[in-house]
Image (cartoon, rainbow, N blue to C red; front, side, top):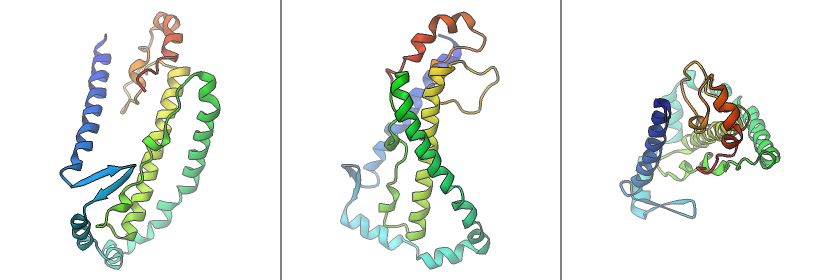
Length: 193
């Protein structure tokens, strides 16, 4: 195992540890998740409602310049929806042919912050938007990562700022022999998903 493989393994372990830690925060903020729905006690919901900002105050406090940026924020929504449908269809049609396990979109696109009573309507819309976009980017990245593992599982020569979940399975740059001898095995190595 190379030093790079060791570091990528530690990164994966830390990401798993982070997911567990985030999941365990439920007890600190007194909520449960039942059938994918978040539940707060009545007293916590009441306390949250008292902390909600009026939407009119929220708009006023944001200022004119922030309000003028709204069309630019929502402009990418149409292309995002097109990407969402295209990537969903792509993996639906191609992944079974390649033998790649499908990516569960619901594991990435999580829309749940709207049930927080301390958010006003505008903040809830913002949370829908951000949850959708960030989840969509994560979903698309995982579909692309699995595709890259099948078609071109070779690490880059230059360092990349952020590596995706499948990168640890890739061959080192320049390892022609390893690539030729191990390509078929790497193309089917999805037992960890």
